[in-house]
Length: 235
Image (cartoon, rainbow, N blue to C red; front, side):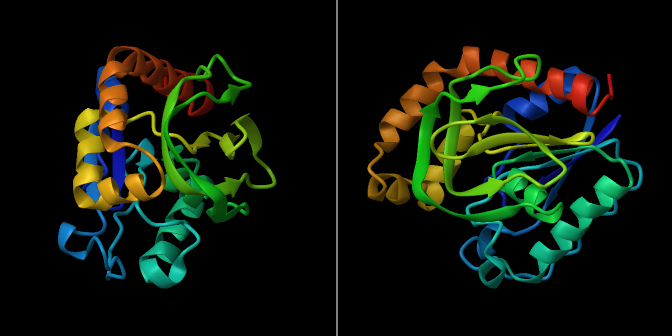
């Protein structure tokens, strides 16, 4: 089986999600949309890959909001159309953070800035323990989605809706893929100052992520396995 990993920018890595997919026998094919040189100006021309030959699409996070057409430019519309095509063609999608927001918007939900950022390891309320536990899960987002009309919300907390299922696809607001290396990449490309401005200590975020690595990897493997079995129906 083949999984298309859509990376909006080079700091976004499949991480623990990718590790679990490989353990389930998937070949990962990665496509980066915005180069490191255009990280601050992501309005680029982008040709998204066709979905032919892929059994699964994983859309990772991004430093931009999935509502922000002016900043992102035309490739956001192309991405939303690709997600609609995946839904129409019955190709499962796992959308993570920005990916979950984009999936929600593509299928009729909404995305907008939240009242405050959610950064760090936090608990959620999961209705589907067969898919994933209450956490803690890593979060780094300023925006939030409302699920599409035909979707079922399956997790939430006080800050935002945290997950929904629609057909064979699932969107989550949290970051099951993150490990310390990916987090450090975010911090190095502007996240350090963002975290401080929002009242979060970057060193504490890294230390907490390192401390959560073993348990976090187990939770992520449960999420990927549950998604593949109960939602995408690929195993």
